Length: 319
Image (tube, rainbow, N blue to C red):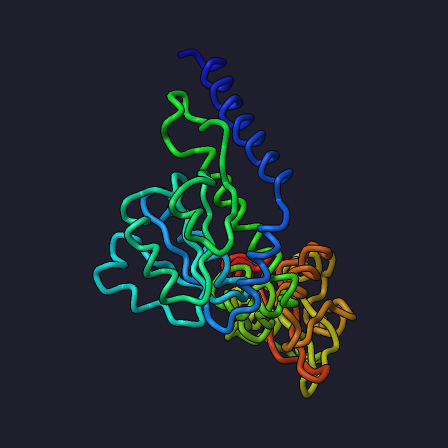
């Protein structure tokens, strides 16, 4: 195959899945509303059952639900009959995913899924299947054709299942008033969580370069060189007077003839940019980017507290 043929095949696959998603969108209705009502009205968790490719879809939906405030757990159909059914409690709702709805493992489970849970929701592409017949609510994920060239590998069908799972999660989020702060609680270690919750103090440098306003060139150079930031803060009793960067120092050396009389107060930049230690780290990043600077003074109650560096924030995924 040449390059254009490959691209055309990819476009055709995507177009097929887009058409199937549009069909799913158009047929959303009463059964979807009943599913949302059933899940949201439960006092337990949502158990999602699947096998084969549907099991992978189920795991992804479980992850999305858990991260957006709806407690969920995956149950593999082939393991359920060998002890794992114990995960289901009477107040739980079960969502069973099967494209055919007639997989032997699924069919053998149906009686128990109904008996052990408060409600059974079937997500299937076959509305005349055993799963559809047994379910209290049926979500139709039927497709006209799979996107794969031989029309056998689950492609369009799994895409539709995944998308419908996302739709459930989004609606449940909105109904329950799930906010950014809630999302951050479940993502404390990732970049998303850090951007929503991390404060400036968490990324504070251990170095705190500082000089008095009346010190000379030698002390300024030593202070700037003592840290990796290329900057020192001019302060008196932690009251910030200004800042001197290594760039300020170089420009001064080029312009001054008599260095013996130069003092920190003469060459400092007044009113430097600063951020409170309790501010969000993403706020500090915005100040750094908008002013095209690499370091930012950190304050506590308006007084000099430390330095935060743009490279540290970038390394930690702060955007």
